[in-house]
Image (spheres, rainbow, N blue to C red):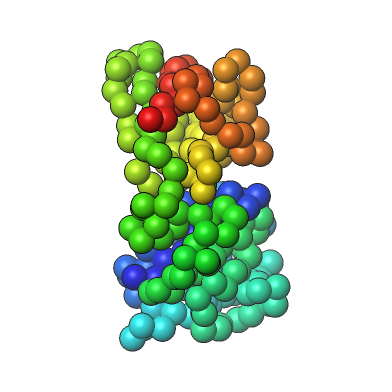
Length: 206
């Protein structure tokens, strides 16, 4: 099934499978892919999938939609195409993705089922405080978001040689072993402690 990978500063923050005929992209919360950025129109663009083909269409946005660096109105998408909306880059992956395409840079692990045997060892996030203390959340996806939307959200992303964490949204920056986590991804080590929205969590890799 084709999908769209959403990247911010070349780090995967979301993966959306194109299960609908029309997948909308914009700043307003009812879109299928929400990009909270003033450069993005409320209803900015959409990906329409018909008979196995996907088309990127700009919805008369203020700042336009760029496909592989070129301003477009409507264009058929090819596997690996990259389009830009606001500060976000979105990568289109078709029905089939080669290992070489999936294994480049921040997109490593995007084809989780086919590359499961070559990825890093299993990992989890263990909650150390609060009502959910003791709970473990397995990191089975390429990107796992943690925190409270609107307050503080971080993302743990699986890469070829391990995991990284970075701040996604919210005024309260998360902490890693007492140091502030910014937008730049920071490698995680077994036993690292993340503090986010008043909750302490531990990264466990086995």
